[in-house]
Length: 83
Image 1 (cartoon, rainbow, N blue to C red):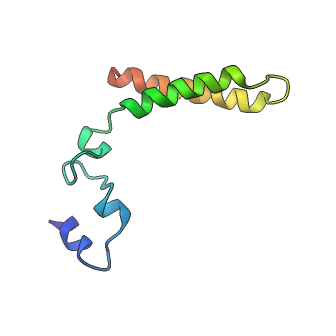
Image 2: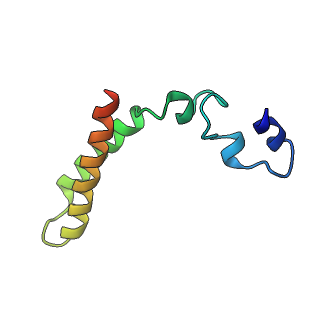
């Protein structure tokens, strides 16, 4: 009810009418899926893995380290939700 009121007033914004963070307000958004990972999480893992294979260690050592850390984090997210 509050979201409907906000979205009909000057309080309307992207987070209230398109990507509401409160579960059950809008269907098909992460909050309504209990913030479980899905295709996006699997895709981030794949793309990050491919990126880490193409980055030169000598030139981009810090980028490679960041990428590997990102892969670890996203992989943990993916494993926690069983995706």
